[in-house]
Image (cartoon, rainbow, N blue to C red; front, side, top):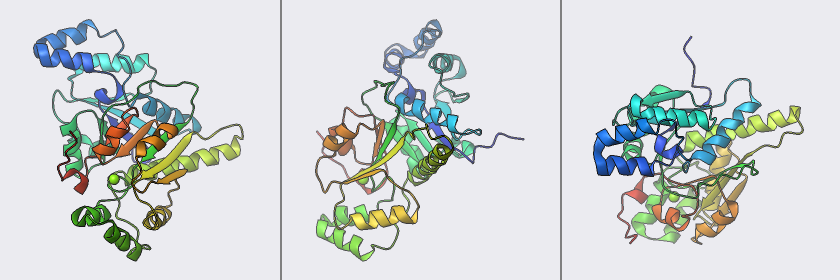
Length: 312
Ligand SMILES: [Mg+2]
C-alpha cells in the first residue's frame, strides 16, 4: 500500500529554509555551477549550519512522539540536483531530523509538486518559487530572516499568525485598502459579524496545528506529566469592533488561539519581541521588517501584495 500523507500535517521545505546556504549561494552566483558543484562535493561531509526555519521544524517533528502514527511529515523540496543535494541530506542526518523524503529538481521550481505530496505549507527562501505557489492557489511562505539561535531549554513551539491575508482571505482588507477608510472597514466587519470569513492561504495549516493541539491535550489526559508544547497566537492590526468577526470565524472553524493581540495599528514588533514566536507569518512585508529579529515568513498573498509599498 502506498504511504498515505493525507492524515498528517505535511510541510514542504526548501534547503534554504532549513539551513544557512549563504556561502553556497555566493559561490554559485560568483563562480558558476561547475565551481558550486565542486564546492558541495568537497564539503559534503561538513554539515550545514541551521537556518531560519530550523527551530520551528525541529520542534514540529518532535511532536510525533505523542502518537504511534506520525502526525507531522516534512519533505525536502530542493532546487539542487541529487548530487549537490547530498550535502543537505547529510546535514539533515547530522542534525538528527526525521526527514526521509526528498525531491531534487535541478533548478526547477518545486510548487508543481505541492499537491502530489498533500503539502499544507511550502516554505522556501526563494521569492519567485513562493509567489508561483501562492498564485497557483497553494499555501506557501517566503522565509525572510531572523534570529537562528535555538534555545534547547525552551520546549514550547510558538507559532504566531497575522490574520487578514494569512488565515483569512483579503476581502475585508480590500475594503480598507480600496477606500483608505478605517470606519468603512469597521462598518463592513460589524455588518458581517456573524458571517465567517473566507479561508486564506494558511487556513488548512492552522487547522492541522489546531488538531495537533487537541491531540496534545488528549495525550496529556493519559500522561499527566506531559506538558503541551504548541502555542498559537494571532497578532493582527484589527481592533474593536472588527475583532468580533475574527473571533466568530475562529469559533466557526473550531480553532482556538492561545493568545490574540488586536493591535489597532500599534507596532506589532514590541508584542512579538515579548512573545518570541519560533515562526511568524504575515502578508505585509512592512510588519515583518519592523520585527526583523524574529524568524519571519512573508505570505505574498492578496491585495496587500498588489500595491507597491515604498519601503525604502
Ligand atoms: Mg495581513
